[in-house]
Length: 224
Image (cartoon, rainbow, N blue to C red; front, side):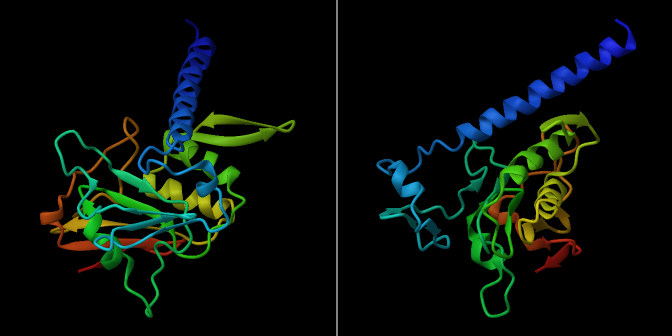
């Protein structure tokens, strides 16, 4: 196989991988975790409200559910493997002196989760480009528009956190943010998506003794 054909073959495989991730992302939109919730509830103007771990209230439109999710984000059981949780949600990671720090608010839910991705500010509702650029970035693709269509050219993959921040900023979504646990200086801030680079260890709830946090173009910060 000559170089051009081999390159096209490799690009085809990468695009297949990208579209497979897109299909999985769409599949995740089919909610099975709140039985009885109707599509109208998810699309209502009231949106959804997730209370802090321990409060255990999930409000979706007109429906309310009791879900105790303390210690459930990550790998609390042998077959669990949630490593990154991306939330397209306004101010879910707001670092406001007048409110509880996000790592204190959401921290009790962590139990092996590597990072929580969200927004420090309001998040724009014009997020179509953002929602395609984020998976493209972490899989190693560069979106390129030509003749009204978007194609994806190979590029070095971003880390999960870097991919979230850069795609949100590029699409003017607001101020993105991310946080995660640390254990004696060890953290998962530099994780790549599976198969794209190194992935750090799961840090169980009992091992957490600090947190990292980043927003926008600012530096990563450590907190006890």
